Every structure is written in C-alpha cells, then in structure tokens.
Length: 421
Image (tube, rainbow, N blue to C red; front, side):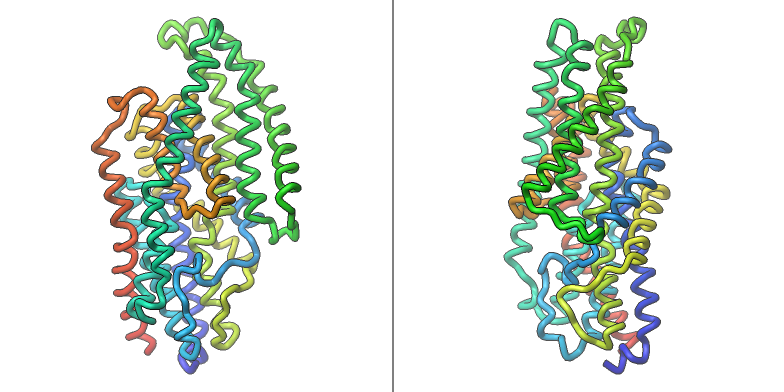
C-alpha cells in the first residue's frame, strides 16, 4: 500500500506509456493482418489501408471497445493470493504490458503475424509464475489456447476453401463470369455486413448503453447486411467489361467486381478489430489505474474511461502507420498469390470463424484464423500455390509467442520490483 501511495502518479504514467506501446504493437501486427489481404490482393494501396484504419479502427476502439473490461484478461490468472499486496499486481500488469509490447515489436519487425492475445496471455502467465506462484495460473485455459493453434487456422482455412470453391462454381466456371459475379456480389457482401456486425453486436455495445438480446442482435445484423448489400450493388452494377484487360488475364473484369467488395471487408474488419482487440493493450492499463486510484483495491472488473479507449485507438493506428507494412506483406503477398476474389474469400472466412468462436466460446486467435484462411485459399489452387518456407516460419513464431511473452514478463517484473520495492 505504501508503494502505491508514494509512487501512484509514476505508476499511472508508466501504465499509460506501456499501454500505448502495447497497442502500437497490436496495430503493427494484428491490424496489418486484417488489412494485409486487401493490400496483397491489390484492392487497396498501403496508403488507402492506413486511411481506412485511421477512421474505422479508431471508431471501433472508441465506440465499441466497451466500458468495462475484465481486469485479469480472460481469467488466465487468479490474483486472490496478493490482495494484501496490490503493488505486486501493479508490477505484474506493467511487466506484462511491456513484455507483450517488446515481443510484438520483435515479431512485427521480422514480418511475423503472431497473436497479440497470446502475447499478453503469455506475459501474464510469466508474471503469475514468479510473482504469485504457478498455482495462480489457470492451466486449463492455457491448454485450450495451445489447442487453438491447430483449431483456429483449420476452421478459417476450411471455410475459406469452401468459399473459393463456391466462387469457382457460381462465377468463374459459369457461361458469363462477369454477369454471374454481378448477380452474386450483393449476396457475398450481405454475408460480410451480417458477420462483421454480429461480431460487434455479440460482444456488446455497453459503452453506448446499448444492450441487445441474441435475437435483436441477429435482426440488426440482417438489416446492416442488407444495407451494405444495397450499397455494393450500386457500385458493382457500374462495372463494365474490360476487353483489353481480359486479354492479359481472362478474369480481369470479374476481379474488378470483387475490388469494391474488398473495400467493404477492409473497413468492416478494421472496425471489428478495433472493438475486439483494443482490450489486449488497455485491459492491464485499466487494471493499474483502477488499483492506484482506489488506493490499492484489487477488482476483477474495472471501469473503462473514454480516454483509455482513445489511447488504445491512437496506439493501434500509430502501429499500423509505422511498422504494419511488414506483416501486411507477409500475409498479403508471401504466403500465396492473392487476387481480389481470393482475398475476399479469406476475409469473409475469417469473419465467419470469429463469429462462430465468439458464440461457442472457442479460444481462438484472429491472427491464426486469418492466416489459416489465406492458407485455405492457397490450397484451393493446390499445395504448390503456397510458400511452405514462409508458412513454417509463421508456425514457429506462433509456438514461440507464449514462452517469449512469459520470459520477458519475468525479467521486467523483477526489474520493476527492484526499482520500486
């Protein structure tokens, strides 16, 4: 208690700085995953992707980031044993933020698409082992996360594979591919609007004082899907056959139909990402501020002031602008060659998988889902369409993430404890 009373302001300043650093890492890595398929498919340029992110990612984080977050992320650790010494939890949260941020910086600079959720979870586990004791870790949940390394990409990849096959059958192998593309485009865009809005609605809009039942969420998601479908129809019907381009690539005109469709998926994925993953960076930040301002009270939940959400949104956008291009290139161009239609299938598959996971409680990673979806798109063209060396590097980076976050958190915890203790 004496430590919190004496160094409260310094601890809050450190929490804000580390929280900003962590959300910067989220933007550099995770958001680049969401936008990478659109950039790799040629639907948007890197500059346009950054512009979309600034608007939609920030809006998602601030408007739908939620005003209450679990202080201990996803129930990974139990802080009961250190309620009498809340400064230990403060050091732990600061160490976890810094550890996850450093690992994300390393991974992003290498172009590795890793899970920001798993980075912060690994960091929390590392702190808990040395700061509280191994018994404070919910090892059952850690086991489920390890299983998700296989489950997440498999589900995303399977759905993406099926979607590519449907576009092949309904559009590319039809007598008039361009006409078929225009006919089915509004249906595909309806699915995007429906799925992405469901992710946000299921998560809840308590920050806007909107609390919907499952049926109301479905109803509103259908309306949003119909609205986006109508807008896409306006864009798509104007696309004319480009005979010159079709000489070089037989389906050039058809792919032009998918380009505006990918703009919809890019905007909606950025919004959904902002609303969902901002908590990875600002959850521990909110925990530190809650403990310090309450004079040392450890709570399982804490209020989420709007200024903390704005810090999260700002950090994520800065991450994409400064370093996000490296992970964008890995996801968008290095795993397999993407076209607008393939990129669209990958993003729709990722969105569908996230919705499925959020309702069934599967502990999945959006990063793993999207990479799996890109793999599924590549496999639809045969194993030769994939760069297996890049795929192996990505899988290794996934396995390393949890222990890397844990080891870094242990080091930073002892350092902070030494400085303030």
